[in-house]
Length: 148
Image (cartoon, rainbow, N blue to C red; front, side):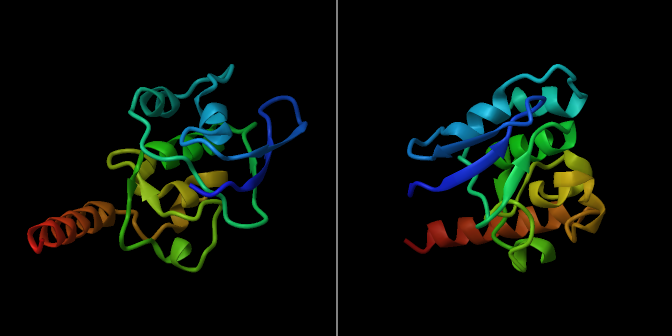
């Protein structure tokens, strides 16, 4: 993985932390997994899921982790399924993350980038569309594997 400069606003402290992402489980994952004072059911469920990727931020983006919903989005990005067909928001390169990822059954059906700042209602994956997209992605992956 390439290193990337990131600026993160720590929950509750308001101070910026600059870091280099060099290891597979880097600073953003460590920040996401740090248990905040105020836990939501969604945070607890996401923390218990296995880690699958280190999040990569879109250029110039900062994360504000002082809101539970933003921490949920960051955790979902580290645990969710990478969608081969991104939502319309992610397709335009909007949102904090470079990868459109979602956790089926969580975040009200939106991807992690759209869930950030409590903006999940704009996600084109909502209203059951995520399941269809996930099934299509799995079918494509299975077909690709059988071609070898």
